[in-house]
Image 1 (cartoon, rainbow, N blue to C red):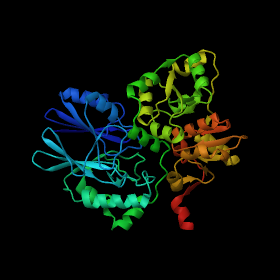
Image 2 (image 1 turned 45 degrees about the horizontal axis):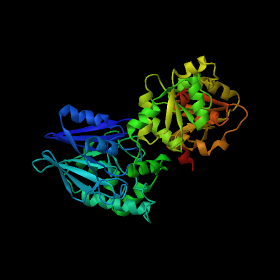
Image 3 (image 1 turned 180 degrees about the vertical axis):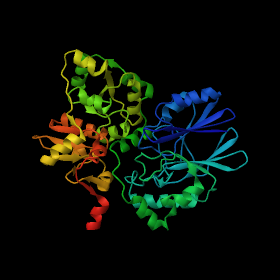
Image 4 (image 1 turned 90 degrees about the vertical axis):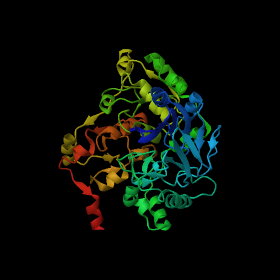
Length: 469
């Protein structure tokens, strides 16, 4: 018996490959299917089933392409109503894969169709539980993503989730290994651990949600402090539920090299947004005017989904050399399929063609601190609310990056204004958005708060602030 977790760090997502006696199954596959096909081919196995734990919101699953390529049926749990042919499992229905059995356990709460799959070996022992977004390591799935279904409320879903965990999950053997769909960094929960699997028995002892004293406390705890979901979540649900273009079609269209002239003409003809995915320091040095910086080596897909609110927005790419297909792939994973090509030769080719470039002003933390000590300067902190509350520069105004599109009025057109995040990745994103909207008097602080904290600038600690109230 083979059980492999195929973890994708940039999405904090876990897919699973199961195999026994020449038969295989895949649970919650990512958009590109080649890794699963290659894995089955390596063992000479046939993929018999494609299991989905629910209609995913944070990524576009590869279930449709994988089913077409292998002939394997797509399996969902009860209440699922996909817009394509699929097997809707009964609660408790079992599926044979070689010598082991996979049992569907309907666990509504995160969504109404959420289903876990319990692997039972040939001796009848409960071995592995694939929990999707029902149970994470250190957390449970947020209950607010399906609230628009009928008259169902967040509290209703949280109550269902409590019942699912209490009556169907906690009763399983403590030795069962929990394999969730996500780990730390995913927006599908709020308290996920960096570990990507654990025993159920240990989770019963340490997971705050499994330790709740009754349903009312559980509902309060899992609904408290939920950040708004990214804009692209409901759009990804629709793609997963009703279908999408094949990944190969998306890749062929997006990974197309364009000369500077063709790149410019395409941008004008389609109203395309230029997305620059290079390192922040490379972007700051020189970039195509009005382009947006979201570096592929950071939290790329989540920030694209948060800041580019139209999932159908035509996109043109500036990429690190040789990583064009990777960027198109990572965009497709979160539903951004309308990529029209990339700038062949990058910004160097653009400049060589005699076309205008722009740059981003930056200063070191030490330079900023020295200037600030002589005269206060406008300063913006674009970190998340929790980071800002924990500790911040006393004079800094807080506008989180996730809110930047809605808070343009906070920034002014005259005089230098400075911007920082934790280390420099998010501040460059924010500054690029501001410049694209015509606010050019933004100066990025190199090294972000980590560097600023080493200066003599006054800081406000949230704990100390609370004690004064």
